[in-house]
Image (cartoon, rainbow over all chains, first blue to last red; front, side):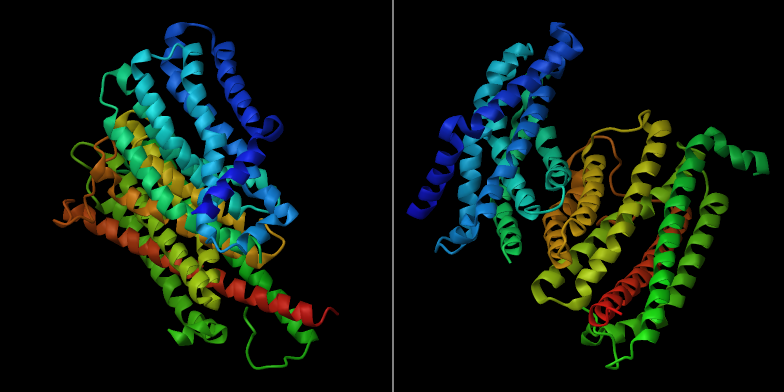
Amino acid sequence: MSQFVALVGRDLRLAFRQGGDWLNVAAFFALAVILFPLGVGPEPELLARISAGVLWVAALLAALLSLERLFQPDWEDGSLEALALMPLPLELQVLAKCLAHWLSTGLILTLAAPVLALVLHFDFAGMGALVLAMLLGTPVLSLIGSVGAALTLGARRGGVLLSLLVLPLYIPVLIFGVAASEAASLGFNPQPALLLLAAGLAAALALAPWAAAAALRLAME
Amino acid sequence: MNGQAFLAMGGYARFVWPAYGVAAAVLLILAVWSLASYRRVKRDLAAREEKSPRKRKGPRGR
Amino acid sequence: MARLANPTQFLKLSAALLPWCAAAAALGLGLGLYLALFVAPPDYQQGEAVRIMYVHVPSAWMASLVYAVMAAGSAVGLIWRHPLAHIAAEAAAPLGAGFTLICLVSGSLWGEPMWGTWWVWDARLTSVLVLFFLYLGFIALEHAFDDKSRGTRAAAILALVGVVNLPIIKFSVDWWNTLHQPASVFRLGGPTIAASMLWPLMVMAAGFLFFFAALLLIRMRSALMEARLRALAFGNPG
């Protein structure tokens, strides 16, 4: 357990050191969202209508951009192999890294979303569901992303390949996340969508670390 | 159904025929591509095997 | 089963099976086409547009079936290191992608006159689209590394990860009542589709299945011969 916490702490320190990646993620998220009013015009009704979708797509892309640093730096300088020798099972190490990744990206996105929602005239009634959906959905993005990141370590054109692999798997998260966020403003119950996101999170927690660990072992051969 | 009526597909011609067309095209492309690769490899392998004597009875596979 | 493991045996077996599969494919597709276009009745509600079903449904079945074959091959290859397993999975992938493409396009062409829309993000359409991308991802990943073995096994892992999509595709029309119609053939109570439509459908499906089998065997034979070619080139560079 203590090794798990230590690993999370290590990754977090790396992420937050010297303004680190979390700032990049937050900045990208904010910029991507702000581009929309500039692009489609400032009409409140139009923005409100697309606000949930825009927030989620921007969050997805921001999460995607940060995936490369999940394993790459450690793999390149050899620390991944050193970590693999630790008594802590590789699957749990993956989980620890996903947790650290989420704390420095997904959580940031979840906290930033309500603020940016204001920019897009997002319907206040849905704010609670939006935050809850992001809390459930963004960890799934980290977990699914970890599988893609591990599979593409050292691949040619790895960045593009990572997107090709991961974005289709992100689609259900996007659909249910937006559904939950828009539910209040459209007049239906967000609960089914939220429950599906929770189910997705449970499935991802159970399956992703195994797949990612297998992919890491493959990469380290 | 006479010829004209058949082609018209009850007014749905512009949906039915492209559907069958795309299916035929994809299947055809897959078949042609697979067969062409097969013939090429077979030819190259035959050429190769003429040059080098076979050391064992069967291919090594992977 | 163990006899199939030996590549020589597989080459012999596949050479024997191939003409039969090809003949069955030609027969199935030819007869199926005739039945679908000339014999099957127009639908009470959909008219002649229902004939798209004879292309759309078999391709949809194949799209999922081939993925299952690909995933099974990947599992066997990763766990038991059976030499032919990965070869089967890699041979199947482009075929599966093709069937999925046919399914998506024909479905779209059927949807426009029937539902009034070329596309809708309902559970089944979305999960079949994801299936298409999984096929593309598998093929891309397979070729993304200089070390072929790494690419093969990485793709195999992806194939297994994507298996969760298969039950979603199958059951999505039961779980969500959105747009795509529910199951009318493979369901617990037996098919609800009329016999005059069921038979052309099954003949076409058989044609598609044997077509897949024939091309799979050809592609696997190609892969084995290619491996031998590489081995020879490695041993005798001259």
